[in-house]
Structures are given as C-alpha cells and as structure tokens.
Length: 326
Image (cartoon, rainbow, N blue to C red; front, top):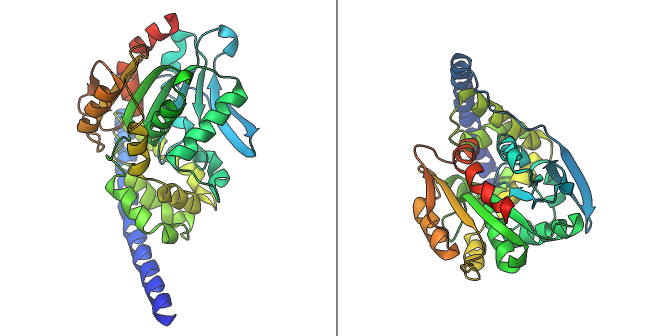
C-alpha cells in the first residue's frame, strides 16, 4: 500500500513539474503571439454569432449551434468538431456557407465543450457519439443532411455513415481521424496518465492543453490567440480536467478501424476529403479514405496543418454549391 502511494505521489510530482514547465513555456508563447497579433491585425472574415440551442435527448442534455431557417427546404449541413474543440471552431466556416441557403447546425459531442458534464460517467467513444448523434438527428426531425466532420468528429461521422447511410446526402471529411492514424502523440500521453490529469486543477491543465493546440495552423496570429481562448473556456471550469481526461480515455483507433470495415463506395454520395498538407494525421490516411469512399481526390491545402477556417474558406463553398441542387 505504501509503495502504491509513493508511486502515485511521485507521478503527481512529475506531472506538477511538467505542468509548471509547460506554464512558463505557454506564458512566453502567449506573449509572442499577442505581439505578433498586434503587428499583423486581423482579416475581415465574417464570424458567426454563438446561436446556441439545447434539448434533452434520451436523458442527455445536448447542445448545438444553429444558423439559417430550416423552413428553407434546403438540406441542412451538420458539422461535428474534434478534440479539444467545440462548435465554436466552425464560427468562420458558417458564414462561408450562408449563400447555400441551407440551415447550418454545429453539433457538440457529448462530453465535449460546454457539454463536458454530460459525458462524465458515460461512454463517449466514437461509436457512442455516433449513437448520440443519431438520436439527436431523430429528435430534430433531420432525415438527411450533408455532414462535415473534423478530427474526432470525422470519425464519428464515419461511424454514423457505416450505421445509417440513408441519412447522408453528402460528406466532407476535414483532417479526420481514420483507420489507425490516431491518437496523436500528445493525446497518447494524456491517455496513459488520464487518472492523474483528471485530478489537476484547471490552472495546471491550461498550459498542457495550450501546448497541444498552439500549432493548429492558424494563418492569422490574432485569430490563433482568439481560438486558444475560446477552446480553453469549457475546460476552465472545475470539471474541465476530469472532462479532458475522460475524452482522452475514450480515444481508440480500434473504433475507426471497425467503422472503416463497414464503409464502402456509394456512387450516389458526393464525398470530399480535405487535408492540410502538414496535418499530423498524415496524407496517406487521407488517400485511403478517398479510395474507400469514392472521393474524386484529396484536396490538399499547402502549408497548413489543421486550420479549419483556411481549409473551409479555400475549398468548400464552391463544392457545397452543387449539393443544394440535388
């Protein structure tokens, strides 16, 4: 028993030292980014307001952002974020798709973002998230939609496609987890020590989280600082570290491998695979996805890793246009 306590204390001590070192590195990084932001300014990209909705679905309080009128008769666009993000990651994307006239809904995965508490004590694996998404679609009366998935959200969308292909009128995967291309090294480390991470105070988690997201590929320094602040907000709450640890605990490549085994090319389904050239998930998996799903090719964005605003802004609006004519 004493040896167990000693090992646990030693582990906490190492984590605390790592957190302290990361904090100083993060503080220096933030100063550099703030200075860069002041020098560069921001661009004029429109930003969608946070039009948040929520509903109780099968005992789970689910949250999403919604823009546009569902009475338009157009197929909705349903967007699913990744880790450690939330629906606000689509704030620069939503205005780019306004011209389609389609309702745009950004669903928040259970146990993520401001729904962190809903995930505590629940399974939040990719298959579980696909079931939650399916329940939410039914509750909202959405029979078919164009789905856009990023990162872990892309894995959820793949699992949903494998289980309910009838719901898909179109599919876009952006820097998506797939096959065995994930988790990335940092998340593997968090997985290995998830019980310790869950015990951290939010202040100790902050530098660790920002160390992992600082290279997300923002092409505007001020927007990068803004994104870091928005992504951190849900984790700054008392249950934030436990929520982050719970997210890491349920990341498994076995889930995407299983989903891939049930996917097949559908000639009637428009598919686009969009990837940042430097994304750590790797272009090889993007090519495999394109071949499996029958996408015409991978649309690669040179010089970026996983910058959602830039990737969507450059590649997707012109691709979506044809979907609303179907």
